[in-house]
Length: 374
Image 1 (cartoon, helix red, strand yellow):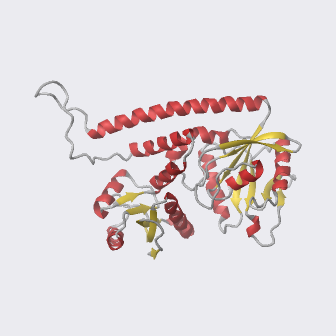
Image 2 (cartoon, rainbow, N blue to C red):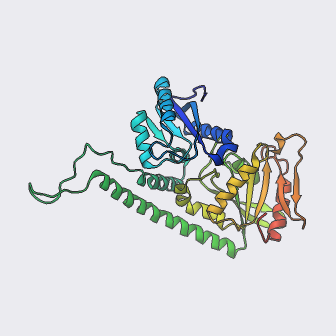
Image 3 (cartoon, rainbow, N blue to C red):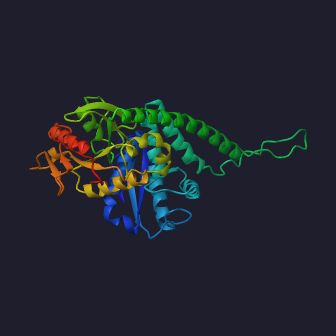
């Protein structure tokens, strides 16, 4: 158990269960959970409770001993929230809230709340709403015991009508259908734009990377745009496309998309289909990596797992090792494979060192497309 210094208003207990496959990255996962919690804005992580298990408990996710520990922490700190660094079933979430007598969130719900706060455009808000409704549709539980069935029929002998739970589910389905229809129009508009670019032989390069790797800072440096960039998780959410000029190539379209994260909730992948399609249909992926991070290889693997999840594993990649200015004796440079093709560019999006080298690598790869992913 670890204690944190409160920073915001609502005291929150964090819970991380270490399963066999997670042990090597436990501290990294805990630090990420804390950053995610702070990103919501009104939650203050004050304590982290850790445990080891081979498998989740079916009823409470944790065992009764650890459950008692969590309850004691909630009581002593007067915590308003408990956040699990895992995905909970609807039954587990309901059981935990009854036992702990406070709001319980899982990792998926936490990320959805962050996305809801960060979406700014009409499309982004639609996608987030769809993701939240998709999540809610699987977490509607029988919390309506105080409500009787709505009466159906005529007169005193009318039969039972819909339960409130059934009404909610029907309303959710109607709203989700409406959002999907609106997003389908967005998807069609994007498809028309892509066809126009292909007709004009304009290449599209999509920025990908773990959240907070510096994608938006690099995007701004390349395009002279003013996309919001900050040292926080999911600083930008809405997709942005800009035209830039590359020597020897001419005009290309650079797309900045949402940052990836390990185990990206499938609700988000489904909802952001129209946006993520820009990644799938790109000519080249710029995989931005935080070169200064001690466990950068693990982040690379996590991003590639999401790339595969969205069906973009066959799109060629060029790795961009960003934040090289934070590494001693690491100049800007291009790494090449045995055939001399660029595979990695070391640069600093903050200082601008290496940006020219990145443009050179882009020109080489777009003039002679890679046959396989770097």
